[in-house]
Length: 161
Image (cartoon, rainbow, N blue to C red; front, side, top):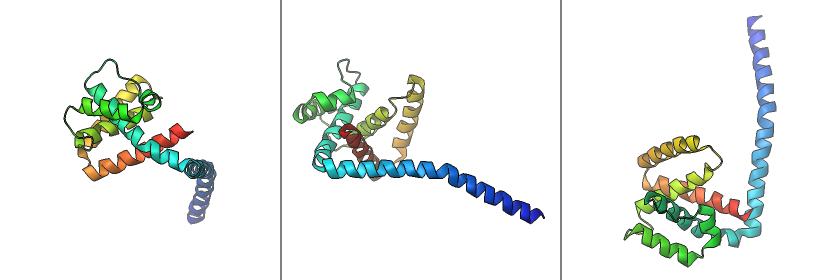
């Protein structure tokens, strides 16, 4: 009798988990399909936008770190400045470091996450950014590069919408 009750509880749990996970999987599937459609439809634009977003992220975080009062938002950097101006401003901000340096990569990662947290309150954003900063310090360069590439790709898709 005890085994039968346990089995019945497992069946109920399984059924409930299916009901809960099905809409989530459908939403994820729909998002994936939308992203694939965007990439197919706007693939060339997406590929052209990725380096602009990456440079804008690096520049934004660099300016924030150096407390430049006249810095624009990431969105404004992407939409209002041409790629040559972005590159020149990044080189100036990096003050001799390469845009391919660990410092520039870390700047890019921080800004990319900062933008992802834009919908949060200031306190929540600061808390999450502290975690991001700690995590970045523990990752290898290849892991940081992979994370930055994924984040920038997602940002570029967002800007195509």
